[in-house]
Amino acid sequence: MNYAIILAGGSGTRFWPLSTEVEPKQFLNICSDKPMIEQAIKRIGGLIEKQNIHIATNEIYHKKIKGSLKGLNILTGNILFEPQARNTFAPISLLAEKIYKRDKDAVILVFPSDHYIKNNSKFINVLQKAIHLAKKGFIVTLGVIPVRPETGYGYIKAKSKKKNYYLIERFVEKPKIAIAKKFIKDKDFYWNTGIFVFRADILLGEIKKFMPLDYRLLTKVKDNKDLNSLWPRLTSISIDYAIMEKTKKMALVPADFGWTDLGSWEAIGDLLIKDKNGNISIGNCIDLGSKNTLCWSNNRILATIGLENIIIVNTDKATLVCAKDKTQEVKKLVGILKEKIN
Image (cartoon, rainbow, N blue to C red; front, side, top):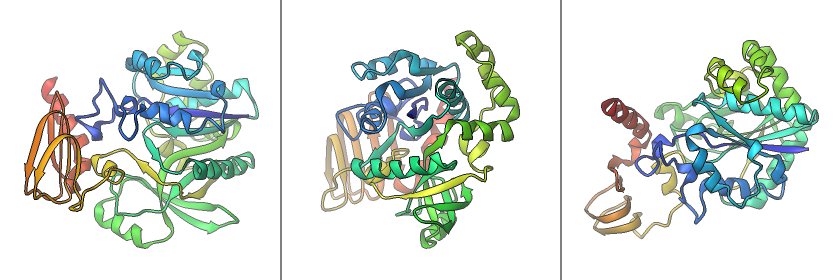
């Protein structure tokens, strides 16, 4: 059977100040009237049964996740509450082990919860192709053709085109702008969507091979007591670094379904309606003579005059003013703010 793991434990720091550690973006209504986590669940409804959907989130979001999932019929036992944030390898591995114990033939699909998908029918069609490959023993990732030199995304270089997929030459994580510009001109490079499809037994075999100490810990987790005691001993690393960049079983399926990773303010600007001067205004905003500017205000009037390529986000707690080409620096800024508060 098919199973899903939806990753919903991040704090969304690059989307500050709208997204905060207390109220991260996966629980916000950003491009819809529904929280992003709910959208992530609903878009796979025709492919995966509700009882087979698992969610990984942080323990601090216990109330948030239950509130967001109310009425969606997700089993409480299918929610992994991570004691501490430890990147993506630990939750994916732990849930893969849990699912494998239940179903030795399980095919698992991993989804971040903060993506926008424009064409859901195309999305499902690509996933079905990926499932077909996964059943043959591949660990499959979906790749999107880059449309701009994005420094906030990971890249994948494909090689050896097969019938409807590629083998993978290498991964490149968040390159500098000069490198990203070169990738745009090279048709072998794809954006890494972070969506993976694999048989549970195949992934666990690769974990045993490349992360043997973690594999032994995973097999010992039987209940919440074990989880709390063993979780801090699991390696804090992304699934990409731990497994995907090392395995020889990877395959890439090209995807064209209108994908956007809502990881920064620049990314969301690609989805919202612009005026004739390229401006986006959300909320209580008024402008004179600005160009290519995004203004978002949840409360007070935000008035701007003659700005260009600027992002301004105004909330009850804070205001961000940022050059459009510096949106990836927001995460660094939030880290500095945390240090000052602590």
